[in-house]
Image 1 (cartoon, each protein chain N blue to C red):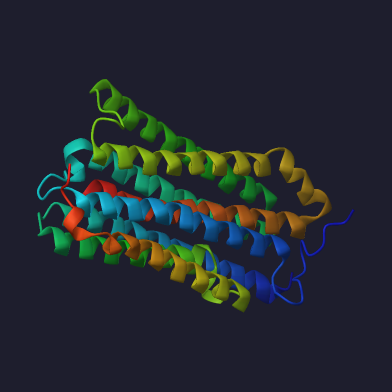
Image 2 (cartoon, each protein chain N blue to C red):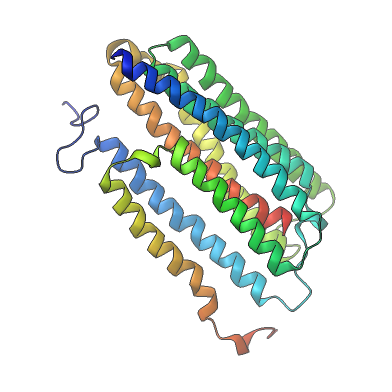
Length: 198
Length: 101
């Protein structure tokens, strides 16, 4: 069966189905992370005065800054991979997509190092409220990075076959994967100052 | 794809680099500000303004929201309404129950 509106826009929405689909999914993601941000605000405002620690007390700001730079850079390579397909340059697409996945690995390695160091110091989610919400938010975000890496890995590997038969459809798929990846970057842009700098 | 389309994409990629540089500068700025030891309320305000600016850049350019179809804008408007409702929930809690152990 042919899946409708993969390339051309659906007349009533004006967008291909996959694009509306990913935005609906991202809307649900906003609510998921929003609920946890809201919990953070509640926990912080509900804490006894002067007891909420500055992120710096427990967390490594330079490492998180490095991770912020890595993730933003990966967003640029992601959008460049899509632009390369638009310019009909598959080799450049593979290069940029490869770099995006590599950046994902870099982010996860830094995060694993951070987590490992906390555990060595005996700091766990159960240790205090701040660490509980820190591990919840960054853990969920890390899972999203991992998910994005799997999708991107598929599109640079077996999924790339579609380029030969239906290039426009493949380009749209990469754009949709990109929208998700940028969203994960966007969440981190808010997580970073909230947890580490305030 | 026509030659004008190709030129439009090339122009976009130059924009992406500009956005990247701006995001980097903003990242360094937000970290630098955090070392000034400003009062908490001021620090939160500045950090949120910078993060919102960075987030808008990502959404507008990388996620192509600067030129998207109406249906996506409506969808996002609805999302923003519900998101704000979520963010205001903490302020609805009973303040007199704070610090109860």
